[in-house]
Length: 185
Image 1 (cartoon, helix red, strand yellow):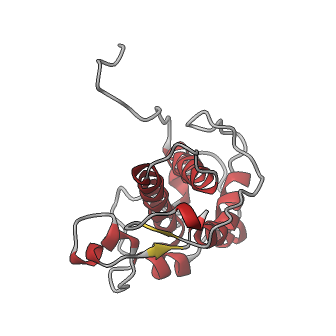
Image 2 (spheres, helix red, strand yellow; image 1 turned 90 degrees about the horizontal axis):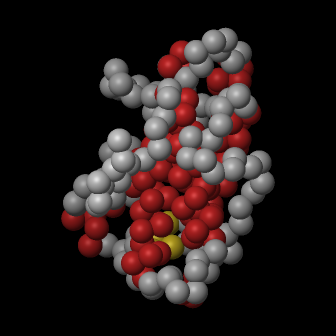
């Protein structure tokens, strides 16, 4: 059935592994856009890609690093049987894909700079300008993503994007969700 005008959908994901790969693809896509903004971009375009980056980053750091208090439907590297239908990677490989420090650094509720306080819902934190070091954040999570992808070579990217092993570059040091970005890139 064809979608009606004004309706949209993300790509179909056949399993939980493809759900996580979708998050990876969308993080990479937003990062690449922030690294190479179009000359015609408005401030709103930059904000959309920053928020997209932060949303998918938050989802991935929870997947790789939220080790406790998981909901029964949460996907997590600590529940590998949801990702690998067949043979699980060795424990040493799973441990190499686990990083609680990124989740603690960027998203625990006790953290005053948590992504969720600026993005997930409306809070008084949003009145304070917050700069996000997108390049640094991406480089922190990139090794986990690459290790994860290496364990899932059999999957076609769920978004249809070409999954590459290359490193994207971003010249600016940070972005801010409340001011112009032109001088930062």
